[in-house]
Image (cartoon, rainbow, N blue to C red; front, side, top):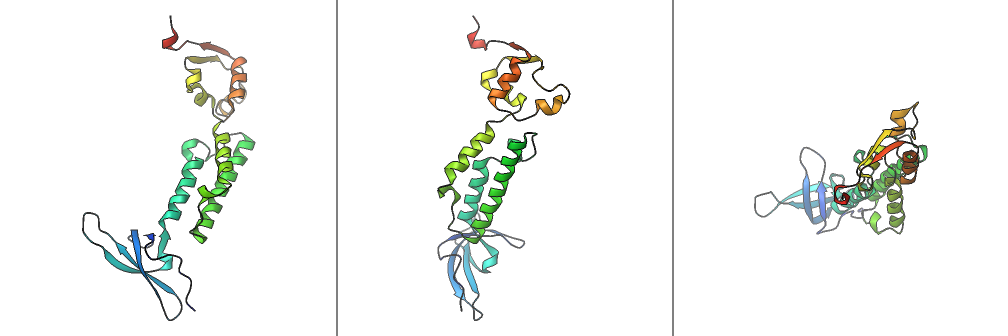
Length: 199
């Protein structure tokens, strides 16, 4: 009994195992006596002409479109270390939400590996995922809020609105704009008008 092909003729795939790898196009599919499949994949050499053909087992290949979809998930959700959400930030609920998102990422990666037709961005759940990401990104540290154009020219002289006993953690806690405003109101602050507003 021959297995059902995971890839189709004409499909772009990625050879990802071994000492070399890269994209190619499936040019043919053959079934062996034991039922296993082999894929004839055409590769191009950068700077060269034409293509060369190589035979691979299914496990050597990945669907490039599925990998692109997973990359889209990662970028759109913005949960990497560059967002500050890859590590605990002191807000228990926000930490839990960010952790849940990373778990969703892993589950999506698993689904994509099992079903190369799955596209997270085309799922009916995608808009809700984006909304949750926006909610996470509404939480910033004090320095991040002060870098916001709305607070340009604002200097905190005496941060009484923050926890003095655990100041570093309090100052670096990810909080909403409303909470940041509340802490500013309880602190000694200088607000200088932006240059274009000076008379």
